[in-house]
Length: 237
Length: 368
Image (tube, rainbow over all chains, first blue to last red; front, top):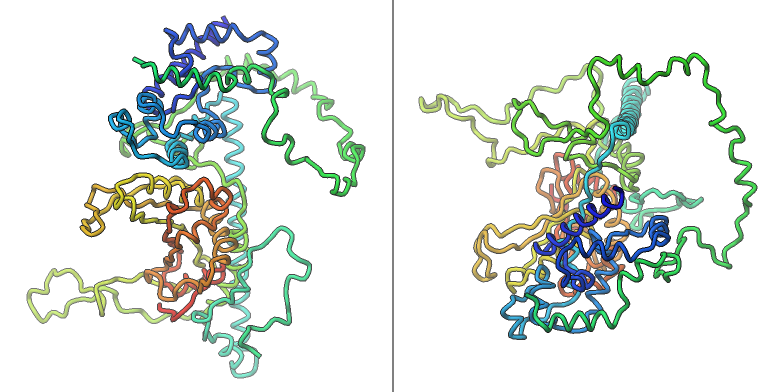
């Protein structure tokens, strides 16, 4: 039962892959080309499944090596190596049309004549990665696991909302204390409001703006002497 | 079906390299790996030895196990999942059931409504944020209180600002045709500018989104899609956002573009975490390394708080993501781009104040 299930799933995967190959979504690698001569995908799967001993299969399970012979997505390094190590500058006429059709700008007729434009391998790679579907399948959870997921999600949202609220309240507190201080300066300082008028002067704020030295992103480990108190603006004495 | 040349190609290839399946079948431990394993815990001889030994770590562990806690008898007696399931009026959906958000929005009257985008089952749900960007942290803790202080205008308690005249003016009824006419636009042009409210603690300007736009001239001129592909992947690499492509809207004969025919531009829109990371890289890594760069022009801006500046291809190549594998991009195809910093400020001067505090220099005459 279990073996049959594996067989079915892996042959289904293989069918999907061959379908993608036909659509031109996944570029066919060498491995699939080698087995193309075999009549059906089921036969192909049974042959390769037999070749793995149970010990090897368990080892593969331990080391997380995918057992299916047709991976859904070829690894990045392999794709890079295959493209860069390709010996022929111009692949054979029909191979080019069949193998690299989705990422080649050469039409089949031009390639058959053998005078298509030479495409930079880097551009081929860029096209491969640009058009590759990288979206993983959506999460599929059972009821309990989904509930856990949802609980954690809600807790995280709640935490962030509390943080935002805290920050907003802190800003409000600062604003109100600024307001109180200014009101005190205006009425209670006893200098006829001179300090208040000076403090309300907005000259140069929107023209000089912040000095560039102010804009320094915070770091995890700031230097012990972070502020130079003797610093003067270059033009200033 | 398959002709001979292709067969010979593959037989040659198979003979040259060992089979992919063979390496698969071997356990991974015996295959030499390209990457060093255990990258994070690797230590060199020149490093100083770790001060803590294993026993120190062991003493930090709690001695009491949570597994040894005893359950009170009453709780154990009342735990009867079967009875609970039987007592339920409505059966729960089966364990593998999963709600699926509807694929299409069929309007507010349809019984099957999508969940809000913040819900994990929504199709629009984006998990995260998974990091706290430095730029955001700096803005929240330092920049926003300072901007609030700088822009503070004191009004005595009980002060009411005098009512302003209407922004859209009435017609003077000098003509009978003025009746029911739409209102007049503002003086000095038909543009109705955004209203600037005094900056208080709840409307401090902040960066809302960043747009990276790149017009690729050669994409249409050379009739070659590779220019657009390289530009797209470069923008994608520096922004961490999937790009959109755009076709030209107008015909320009000397450039060889026709409306709706040629894809000529790529654009990426950055929000939230991506945006702050990008901004941090821009301010910390890229802009300081541009040679003879004076800053953003003081007259830049659309007078509603969005500032744009451009980077030439050499500057775009300074982004760490492009620099680290610069060889993988055809050098002449790396695009220049326009970067628009959209802020929530209503005027350019507020936006400039914010951006200067965040590390973007301005030069020349400041035009508001």
